[in-house]
Length: 238
Image (cartoon, rainbow, N blue to C red):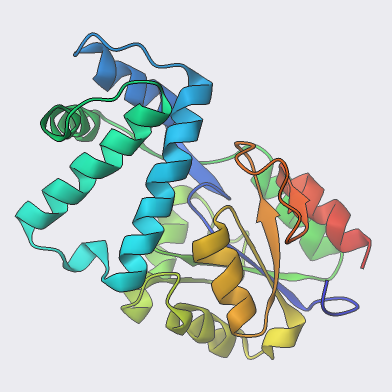
């Protein structure tokens, strides 16, 4: 860590604090089965790694939320195609778009991972402030209410609040301003190297990789944990 003991820990949300409910592999398997495709968990995880990197690259150029409907449909067809390629199925873009439509028609929401609330409590009892930075297209307070974070973190800053998506540095600077803390006393914890860690470092924060899906087993550019308890352990070493 860059400081002896940071003051505030910022967390990414999707893939870090919360995931789909039911889990993303169940949603993808149900959608793909309609087209005769069988997907395994490891393959889906590999595919999401590439698809989420594609999402990060797009948001760095122009946010997905600003796309026209036809452009957004093509984007998510390609996103789904990357998920499926990771799972071993090289389908054409039209088929991928149809499978994505099946994904979207299923009923699903968001749920915190089981370790989140206990680990956040441990961090707070150790004297750390906790907050979130997310690309969710809604206000931070609305997001916290929706996924059950209200009362468990100090605040959340979202793309809905700022009008900018990670990796845009404006969302990190907005979070630091809201926290009233110098970036050298802040740590960003997230699952994306390109969207969470490197842009956080670019504004002066430290960064920790939370690699729940074991997408980066050999990553040594940043401290790495596979659950939030691992993050607690890393911070206890500062």
